[in-house]
Length: 192
Image 1 (tube, rainbow, N blue to C red):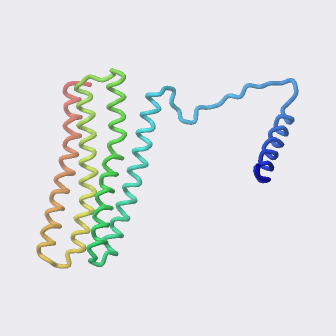
Image 2 (image 1 turned 180 degrees about the vertical axis):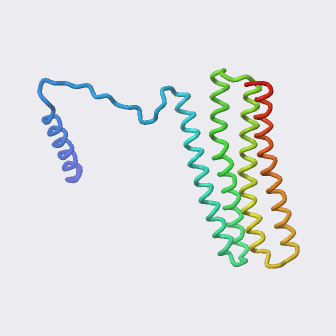
Image 3 (image 1 turned 135 degrees about the horizontal axis):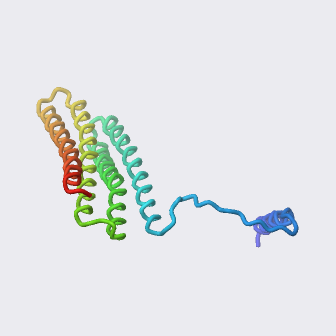
């Protein structure tokens, strides 16, 4: 063995023996270890992991959205750089959608697994999740249409493309909010 490994083993054993020597003699006290995650079962752990990973993916999607915007601005019309920017934007949108929907998917799976939900409630959860995805995608498209307006440079065809993108983004956001509102209205009328 090399001298570094032997020295490392010696240090670890020395500190281990010193730690044992510092224990109080004759008293053994049980330490209460708190649960840092805050879940008590495996399904709840998976639900929490789904929610937390969803937040992480959504945050990374947001960062990639900014990176895609920077790539568009610095592309200077180079087709290769524009392709990279389009790919980054596509993956950022996918990341945002997956991140936003992860918590909803975990909740639907948890409801179905526990049998705590009726089929109508599961469908309502899915509709709400889809509505949230549509609102998120519409918000992203608002920013994309703003970028289209910025890079149009007065070209009528590019301005038409930007206006069309803006109209569809606003329509998508309205449909997403309407989907959530309709689900809540039906739940109120029928009763959860």
